[in-house]
Length: 185
Length: 329
Ligand SMILES: Cc1cc2nc3c(=O)[nH]c(=O)nc-3n(C[C@H](O)[C@H](O)[C@H](O)COP(=O)(O)OP(=O)(O)OC[C@H]3O[C@@H](n4cnc5c(N)ncnc54)[C@H](O)[C@@H]3O)c2cc1C
Ligand code: SF4
Ligand code: FES
Ligand code: FES
Image (cartoon, rainbow over all chains, first blue to last red; front, side):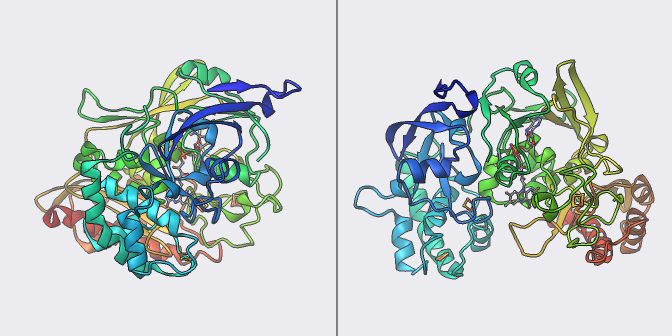
């Protein structure tokens, strides 16, 4: 990471240059220290799939995968993640081919307004990689970080339960974005 | 958020040297960034400690566990030794927040999260914790989530952590580094009661850094239970929580630990409540005796009076579940 001081030399307004791999693409981007990862994605990179529901870690609409792990992008600063690998909802499909989770959400009608859906899908994708959900009750508990104001929970649960085996199969064969770097060292 | 400068040290001493009253360490950021967005916290400098070498979980020579301050709550909860030897800790962590937050939140940060008192977050209202001397809005206000034990006229806030309740019961040690070197603090002495200085949640100095948490070998794996009572089944802070751990020999209790969460400015223990169980059989009557001692002196604030009977019953249930834990496993 390189840091460029502001024109008047004030270090508070310095710009930090980050290198990030976002959805498989290498990106270089300048941010202020206070820019959240979510604001960077939405405002600077126009990746508006990740939603701002609450901006306080309480809803999960901003869920993305950071080095394979699901996080709330509204509660972390972009500047802290130089060199990281990010997967957002824009990177979940394989070109025009929808991901099994996306297909299952359509099949089970797992949304109404759709605002929580990108976060739900990213969260479920990471949950598959974690491999701690072994029952419908487990899925319910481990998806509790994603609220749905429309209350589409039953269909969301059906969709995830349906797609989970396919997600796991996909993880075993190839996983471009999932769990490659493991925990940050 | 107000502007701030940003530093990312790679050595503990370097981080400690950068610290001071107008600087804040940032780890997972899940509490600090939230408070910065509300202007409750306005640091001039952020010290990103995620580059420090504090990410390991290691066995100690005497059979315990040394947990680096930057180990995430998820990694800790699912760590094989924690799952096997300290299930109480695993249960407590997994009862808190959400999977996303637990992936971000760190061991050190969890100890230092601030209260969820509404007025502490609302900069338009008086709050002695946020602004010493301004008054406590909660005493006459919305205090449903507030303390029933150890409160003062200056502050009736509770410490919101689940993990800390288990760490209190397990008698962990907090390892700290400062400019003067390292020290260890017993978990019971780490958090403080509000008294007339509610702005101080704990005994850490501004320029001290938590480096690790150490667990002793005794994890009460056979007989422990974390019970969390909340307004919804998941993703909510505790109204009351109980970490119960028993060492049972046949039908007789050899050792007992009971810590209460959601009821005070720190995880609440009382040696008398634990001593009364020693040498006794694990019966509901004895558990009620312990619960009464633990809640001795409990006082409601008006809207939270329900917590007193709730906590009493939760203690009995957690101890009952702990006593039966092994048979179920
Ligand atoms: C919506 C929501 C729900 C939640 N629900 C729960 C719940 O049910 N149960 C629960 O227990 N918690 C809950 N939490 C709180 C969460 O567990 C804490 O925010 C988290 O543990 C804090 O860790 P962090 O690493 O993110 O800390 P940060 O936000 O990075 O830091 C918190 C504080 O600790 C200081 N700090 C951090 N690390 C160190 C260190 N090593 N040495 C010295 N100072 C340090 C920082 O300066 C800051 O003041 C919830 C949070 C949110 C947002
Ligand atoms: S209870 Fe404590 S934190 Fe809440 S308003 Fe009173 S002084 Fe502030
Ligand atoms: S927008 Fe991040 S959790 Fe709600
Ligand atoms: S579909 Fe509307 S919020 Fe979930």
